[in-house]
Image 1 (cartoon, one colour):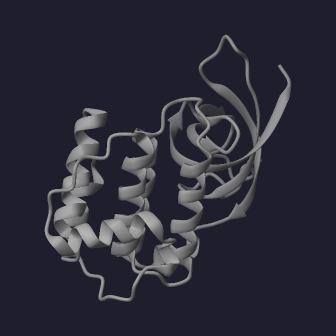
Image 2 (image 1 turned 90 degrees about the horizontal axis):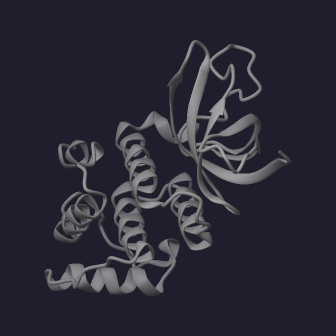
Image 3 (image 1 turned 60 degrees about the vertical axis):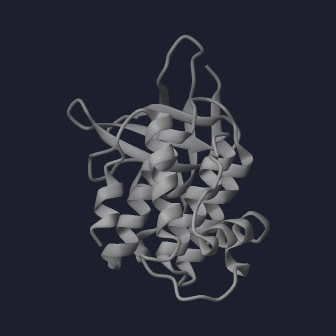
Amino acid sequence: MPGRVSEAFVLRTYPFQESDLITSFFTREAGKLRGIAKRARKPKSAFGSGLERLSRVRMFYFQKETRELVSLTSCELVQSVFALQSSYDVSLALDYLAEVAEHLLPAAEPNERFFRLLIAVLDDLRQGGNHWRAILYFTLWGVRLSGFLPELRLRQESVEIAEEMFVSPIRALSEREWTKKTAADLRRALGREIESHVERRLLTLPMLEAL
């Protein structure tokens, strides 16, 4: 059972037993994995604040071929999203990114382009980028990289925005006033496609629409 280390994004955690956490994390080399972080809920754990959702970390773990869950030993925080959580709207956008990634990414399949997508979108938010732009860019590319992008029969402006997003980095998109209404038909259509694909409702979608 050799030890492994990988750059990763934390997607989700939930309590397990008295002081442990089940953690879903997306590694650069091995794709999405789930593991047990022993004593992670104790004050002086080896994980510190590194298991917050969408934290970018170096994860240390052991993996047995016969077990579904890996054993997490520690993690080193590379980049936090703590500073972004002062805004409720942006914090909710982060919840959405994590939920979509959790459901779209298959287990144990590396996806370098999806990993770089998360890096780009989170870096854009850290630099003050608009959260509605980040949500749409991530959703559009997430669906495309997952292989079920539908034909876009939408308003012309929305089609033009999608076409530009396919050829331009998020930081290089044309200047425009981004609001909840910008390309809303595209965002909602993609949300429906995701829910149909994963066969479940996304918890964060109605919360975004209520902003």
